[in-house]
Length: 170
Image 1 (cartoon, one colour):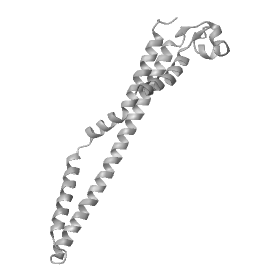
Image 2 (cartoon, helix red, strand yellow; image 1 turned 90 degrees about the horizontal axis):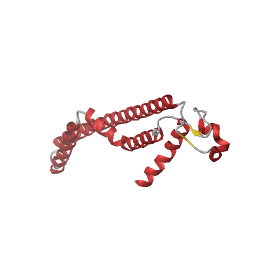
Image 3 (spheres, helix red, strand yellow; image 1 turned 135 degrees about the horizontal axis):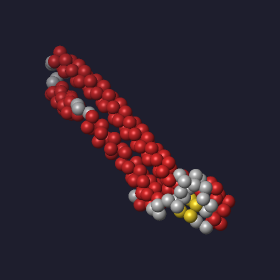
Image 4 (cartoon, one colour; image 1 turned 45 degrees about the vertical axis):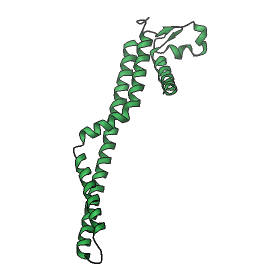
C-alpha cells in the first residue's frame, strides 16, 4: 500500500486546483492590468472628450459655425481613437485570459499525470471487496489490488465531489 496519506494528498491537490480555478478571472484581470501600459492614456482621452463636449455646448452653432464644426470633428476623431484603443485593450485582455486558462489547465494536467505516475501501482485505500464488487476492477485500476481504490478512480471522484462541496460552501 502506498503511503497512508495519498488520498489526502490527492484531495488536497484537487481542492487547491479548484480554489485556483475560482481565482482565475481575478488573476487574468490583474495580469492584463500589469501588461497594459496605456491605462492613463485612455483616461486622458475620455477626459478630453468630456471637456470638448462641454466647450461644444457653450458654443452657439449659428453664430460660430466654423469653430463648432472644427470642435465637433475633433471630438469625433478623439472618440474614434478611443474606440480603437478600447477594442485593442479588450482583445489584449481576452488573450491574457486565454493564456492564463491554458496555463492553468496544462499545469493541472501535469500535476494529475505525475500523481498517477507516482502512485499507479499502489491503491489509495483498500475497502472490503463486496462494497465495490461489480466495479472492482475499474475502481482498482491501475493498481489491480482486489478491493483497492486506484489513484485514477480517486482522482475522478475527487474532481467530481470537491467542486460540489466548494459550490455549496460559497
